[in-house]
Length: 332
Image (tube, rainbow, N blue to C red; front, side, top):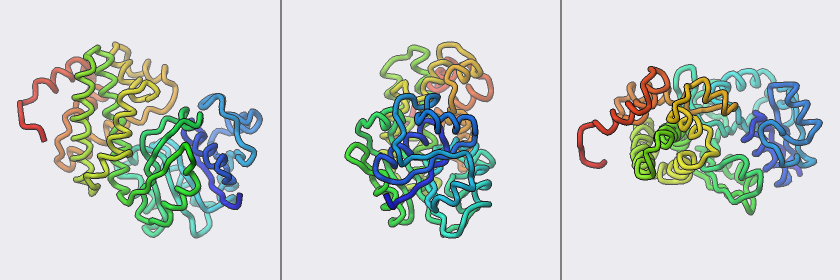
């Protein structure tokens, strides 16, 4: 109980990670920006809105005060949506002492300029700040229900990765460490775009063959972009690449897949977002991935067609026809 960690973000995944750390005997503080929501968590000892069921352990406390977070410990795990990532860290920095350690479970890009999130951390703090990312195939509800799960903790600092692994690893939650922060970041962000595409295909009733082809070719796109940005090809064959891609493209617990399903079934974007009622990271990731691919000259046809559906009003069926009409070529 001498270990401490603060988790920023009281959605389903942040709450799950806080519960996991607390179950493992770590003193844990969960922060959320909405005072009323955090007050209800403190009273109910449960996140009835985003993670109904699991009861908070006694060693898990909650707050809406960033100053309290800074005074609690120097190990911060960020699990806010990607569009709020930079702003949350900027607000937190005003309260933080030296020696901060930053980890994040956010999957996406910096919405300001499409940069990877480790660059945001380095810009706000320093290049020497211990930094790590948690990623991999992990639905919050299953982790909270203590179902077997394996994830990747990526960091260029092995000691920091080992510390996080020690806090989170349990008999039912297996942690693997990886030094390829870029590869793990790209895999975690772009798989959400592919999940929207897979959902669209299934919403159109195109079948299992189409879904399998889309996942396979989608992985190719992720690898091409990831390697171009400095990631290692082998990373994309692991949990944070292929594993996360399969999970989010094939199971309806995925918000991104459900969003795509709704579009494929003829619902408009606003209606689909309202139905899901939580953050859908693949929407912004589609734009940011498309722009990154153009900037670096990376061929990403599935991403391009998904972007056009979301941002240019292209009909989902026409997007599929555009993919099928592409010039025949060798598989690569």
